[in-house]
Length: 447
Ligand code: GLN
Picture 1 (tube, rainbow, N blue to C red):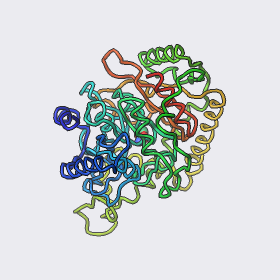
Picture 2: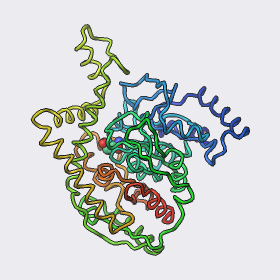
Picture 3: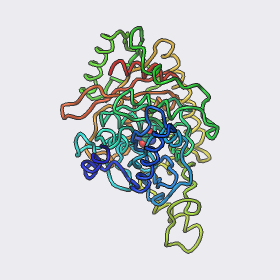
Picture 4: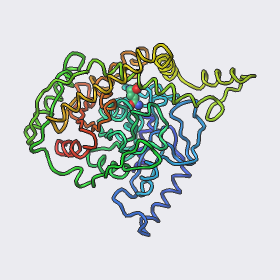
């Protein structure tokens, strides 16, 4: 069914950057046999999944939607990929994304834009736009994305699907090509909360190959989604519904509050501090780490090498100038600047201090509330071509998502209505560290 849907929708949506028919045919056969022989017995055996193209797949191209890695074929699988293959899932292909996961629209991809399945004139969000569009269009049953500052939650909202950003350390980052290592996290995308929970159970867990992986037991699927809303205390940061949030988004959130209350939750507004500092702190830390992580792409060890250089430094310069796109270069420059001697204390150290204070604000809130409810994005999906010309405006649209990454928290994004143009609106439920159970349970009951 997915392959058929790919044939119908893919020419317009362009959710995938690569699909290897030979590998897929081989894998389908292997899984069919594995199910018969009892090797794969879990509930997701045989379920087709799409994987974001910054997650390494052995023998299958992994490009980060960058010219820099256009022909890069990893020699190993990411741990999350290994775990879903051990569960008998079938990878259909690799999905489009903003280059190196930097962006909010999937327009910074070196391999063309992905279109929103609800309306092809609009973006699917980003950076996991291909993964979310694939699920929304029925071109995959589930998908893996990565979320450094909202890249699972925001495109899930724009595409009307459900996406979970797990607690930092919950899912191994081994084999996830790093953007900002202290914020990056792989997570599941599905048509509904239960699908996300089922996939989360499979990919989560401790991995000694990732030094920040947490050794915290993962709850079973049943306990993740059952329990209902009764007695749950949910807080809404009133700062999030101030200026800048679209009226239709506010209205959808108000309707969601009504439904949550009707089903037994106690929902109230509270004041979350530090909101003005989340964007600057995030972009300083993310760019700083990105500038350091992307040093390795020098034309020697990985990926693209310029054909037009006669000496070593020229080769470095030209390879990077030709291999990276505009947004990636902008962030390498910003990151190098905030890490440079003389500015390190004024920007980078200050941003790290702000990060600590942001975490404290959430700690305070979780003494009172089980979950925090917020919009996933201030607007619904913008039109293709309207965001790239104003990067600062695009950064500002991450206002509701980035704090979760700075504080290392889990959050699930799920649909809560449609705007007047027929585009989905999403909301997120944020939990305390390792409390995926609470947010999934509340989200499943709402759904
Ligand atoms: N839009 C944010 C950024 O560009 C988030 C990206 C992400 O989560 N990978 O940094």
